[in-house]
Length: 138
Image (tube, rainbow, N blue to C red; front, side):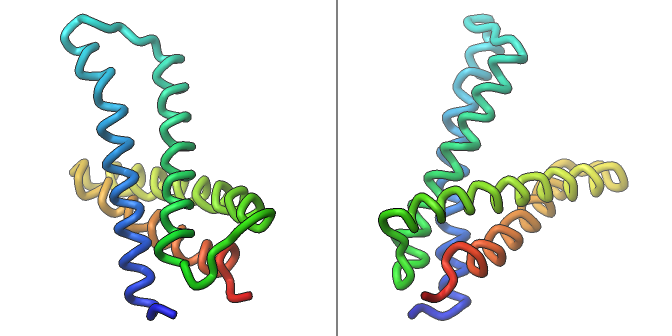
């Protein structure tokens, strides 16, 4: 069984990988829109952002299930139950991320600092709660 430090490092690596993919996918329509080739309405943007979030959560869950928590890998019905639990935990993590970032930005309007603080809170929440509730020892 990997140590807590290495498990958290793998968790962060999986999250960073999936986040990078989502940013690349979501930035493509924006680049085109900036050049006048595509004018996406706000509803389409929300739909794309929601879909990207679900894809990111799913990808993150699969990577963590295969790599980070390989010693407690979920299969069959436990996989589905774990994925649904991970969605719930990650949703709270996303709200925590946005809340912390918004609060910090209101007091110190440095976008990267606010974003980093929010992301850190989200990762810590997601790791702690998913370790405790989704991939708990059998």
